[in-house]
Image 1 (cartoon, protein in one colour):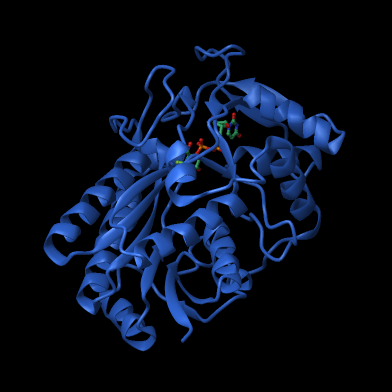
Image 2 (image 1 turned 120 degrees about the vertical axis):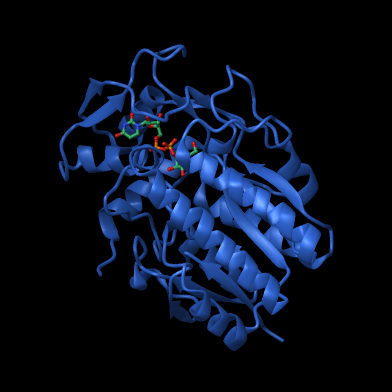
Length: 328
Ligand code: UFG
């Protein structure tokens, strides 16, 4: 029998890639999305239910209609900078919304939960490689909201036996190489799409946020992971739960860090064009360096991140940038 997976945020960047992967793996991805940042055009691989996480009755209706075996919860606001200016938005949607969803899932007896958390929960920890047991000391509201949801999941395991696989993402990049879905945020805030926009003069020069960090070239360092590899891990996480292996946290990154200047240089190599840029002040909430220790996902889940090299990620993003977009 085909099994339904409830995918919140399935109309968004990562959620839509997850739906494609789930469909290919034989599941029916049911997208639940309020389209606040997602695109109905991106829902291509299963049914669409428009709804808001803060609307408990609507959630109950969808659980009852589809009887999903697992929830994959992508729906969240995810901009570090914005979270420092408008923390209420992050606590309301991310924390209260997730609580509503977790409670609805538990009450519906859907006890497998795959959750998109973030390396932003670790905070700024001087030049260490972060593994799943590293202390979590978020320095921005976004990271704090996600850490709180991790705590809520632990409580619901005690109360309702709800099992969770928590993925702490590092920086997700790239797009579906077949171009069926892609990365299209409005407004765009992420480094790689912004660089490609600057190259093609869709916007002004990119501003490098801070050149005085304690890193070799003074710019922040991040660990980039290809979205297709990331969603592969989600299907492995779903199977992990189906096989009753219990709740577990996994980092998803590659263990290799790139500075902002290094990403700019790789973009020049891939596109054969200079990225117009200027140097600006630091952005509030940015950590100096976030690099993953990701052995656990590889050894325990059997995860093989095959596309997560910077060249491939920028090539795939560049391909989508030239051909794909969504419309409201
Ligand atoms: N950056 C610039 N200029 C820009 C945009 C970004 O210099 O115009 C820099 C940032 O300061 C940072 C790096 O590029 O050093 C990456 O920035 P992004 O905005 O692309 O990504 P973030 O690291 O801020 O955040 C992303 C996701 C979060 C996730 C986080 C984990 O948006 O959801 O990765 O690091 F938590």
